[in-house]
Image (tube, rainbow, N blue to C red):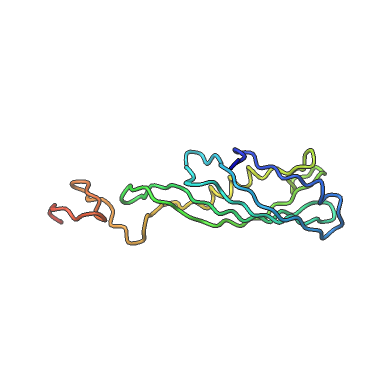
Length: 150
């Protein structure tokens, strides 16, 4: 199976030639650079493009699985999340729109931003994570230690 690496461009030539209210649905899988975070599997992105008067509204849903390190016990775990976001694209330049270039929209940067914003500030493998013993460093989720509790 082929995955586009870091560049997610969608051809919008067909929808640009259609009337207002027309839609185009699709999906793709991709690998993405997440500033040091690693995806456990390719990101699945489903989208709907809606033709507006002077632009195209993109409605996106991304299924993401990221390898995270628990901030309490330091174990690796898979953080699964579904991210939904919208962006508007236009051939006309303007601050409120992302550009349509060569009849394509590039969703790589908006997708990357949304995934990074969705990451937990303090990642936990479980809400019941017991963490590490401050004395011996034993992962208390795996086995209790014999250190004296103070």
